[in-house]
Amino acid sequence: MSVPAFSVLATAVVAVWLALYRLPFNDPARRRRTALWLAGRTGLRPEAAFAVFGTVVYLVLGALALAVLLVPVPLAFHQVFDLPGPGAAPALLLAVLGTSSATILCVSLLYRADPRADVPGEIARIQWIASILALPRACRWIVPAAAALFEEVLFRGVILLGLGALGSGPVFALAFSTCLFATGQIALVSTRTQAYVLGASGLVLGTVGGLLTAATGGVLPALVLHMSFAGFYTNLGASPTPGARTATGRLSL
Image (cartoon, rainbow, N blue to C red; front, side, top):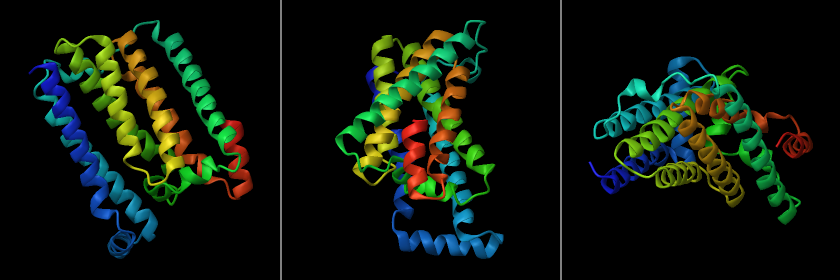
C-alpha cells in the first residue's frame, strides 16, 4: 500500500472508531438510561457502571482499528514493542520534562488570555473523564493507562512506524500521526477550553512521543510517558472544591 492510501485509511479508521464510541451516547438522556440499565444488571452505581462500559467499548473499538491498520503495513506486531536500548531512560526523562514544560506554556497562555479559565474544572466535565472520576481512586489511574496503551500502539506504533515502513519520510510520519492524534482528542470534547487544552496537549504529547519512538525504535518509552500523562490529566479535576481545582491546575500544570 502507498503512503497516501495508508494515510487516508488511517484517517477513516480513526474517525469511525471515535464516532462509534461517542455518537451513540452523545445524548445525555440516552446515556443516563444506559447507565441505569447497566447499574441494574451489575450492582454498580450508574456512573461507575457506565464508565466501565465506556472503557470496554473504547478498547474493543480501538483493538478493531488496530487490527485493520496492521493488515496493509509491512510491520510485525512485535516490532512495535521492541525493547529500547540503554539510552532510553535519559531520553524518557527528557521527554517527560519537555512535555511538562510545553504543557505549562500552553496552559499559561490560556490563563493569560482568560484569567478566569478553570482548566481542571473543564477537564473534569469532559464526558469520559467525568465517568472515570466516578470509579474508585485506583481505577482512575488504571483506566486512562489502558486507553493510553491502545492510543500509543495505534498512533505511535502502527501509524508512525507503519508510515516509515511504507517509505514515508520521518517528518511527514511524525506530523501526520501527531495531527491525527490531536484531532482525535479534540473530537471527544465539547467546549472551546477543553478543545484547546486537549488539542494543545495532544500536539505536545504526539510530537514528543513520536520523537521518542523514532529515537528508541519502539513505543514502550512513549507508552510510559503517555500513561503517566493520561493519569495525571484524568485526576486533575478530582479536587473537592473549585478553588482547589484552580490552584491545582495552576501549580501542577
